[in-house]
Length: 348
Ligand code: AMP
Ligand code: MG
Image 1 (cartoon, rainbow, N blue to C red):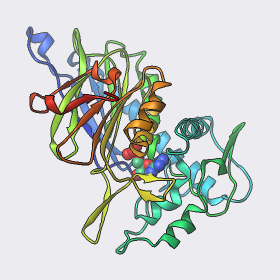
Image 2 (cartoon, protein in one colour; image 1 turned 90 degrees about the vertical axis):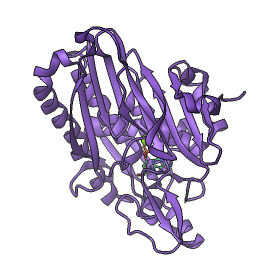
Image 3 (cartoon, rainbow, N blue to C red; image 1 turned 60 degrees about the vertical axis):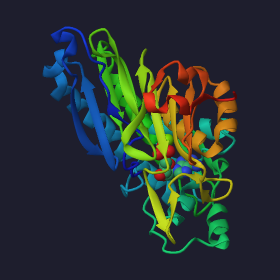
């Protein structure tokens, strides 16, 4: 469960103006976890509570990682993978909930989001696989793909089972958002006036960063990571997640291959540079951003239409840059002036 190297949505942008108290910057602390960086932010008036809040967040996110990491030998997911093809293994309610969430989005996306794609993810050098120096052959891909498919995974009454030897669950596409929710749900009652929990651009926030102003985050430019393409205003405890082709990739014969696999082909997705999803909860946003990245704009929009409160921004991997937003996303998004003309509403 290594994290994506960095987030599409990273720069926190705090809107300026007003009196001194209103201008005080939120306070924040970052730490390494899940192979990436987590950041917790509170309004300046809560600075004194930051250390205890961070301590709680570290415990909660650490618990998710300890139970679900592929890289911890006795994690519940490692035990599930080791028992593939054999008996069901016991899982905690927490791991069971994350697996159930993964299966929900596997079904909703027609298998575009599929946490059993693990053997293929490894073949391409991600999630602990050896970095390939040559392109995997079609035979290699088919051999790995034969052990994938979300129907191999069943989750019932405190147990989980993988029906085939060689199958591997990889929660890298959902666990960070799931961990944000686990942390947020426990901390938000203590900090209803302002709280933001962020793991590598999977984030959720309550209240405001400065009195009377919603949290605002920058959407990173996938073609120029140091710049943003616009700002997203987050109200009402909403969550955001990002998937980008620049976050983790391998280069083979001078060509870049991204870490998100199309389970239908067993090959890295091409044609998409970045997807940002707004949703009521971070676990849903995380699974959805990966699913939308695989599905492409049209199919993704059809899926999102049936999901209340969920909307997306897409940046296809082509020049000139296009920023395609669903109507729900457009309502919360302000493009930077230079990208105003690049924006269009999906389906129009
Ligand atoms: P994200 O950055 O949230 O889009 O997640 C990408 C990570 O999810 C990858 O690094 C893999 O560990 C895993 N993954 C890759 N392809 C898929 C897929 N089609 N469905 C679910 N998880 C995937
Ligand atoms: Mg994801």
